[in-house]
Length: 118
Image (cartoon, rainbow, N blue to C red; front, top):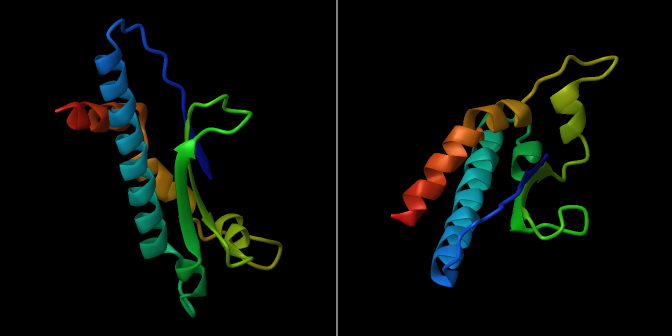
């Protein structure tokens, strides 16, 4: 799962631009960490391998995002996607999408940015 935030600033003062950019970066990090922690907590559990395999990254966007801020939460277990979406022999047991829905909305993200602007 990947999040991408596109910032467009009409601000003239460099210090204000930098403060808003920093607040956006911190808000993205907070959001991605909350999503990852929620996904770990609610990952289907038999051995705990999938929960232990959940990782996250936050940073500037790549070529596609053209430098916008990105965050990613993912499982390296090899079967995290099957748990999330199900298969022919197993019902879906979503844990990533519900975590995203609980922690990422435009309104929540805007509130986090405001909080970091102080």
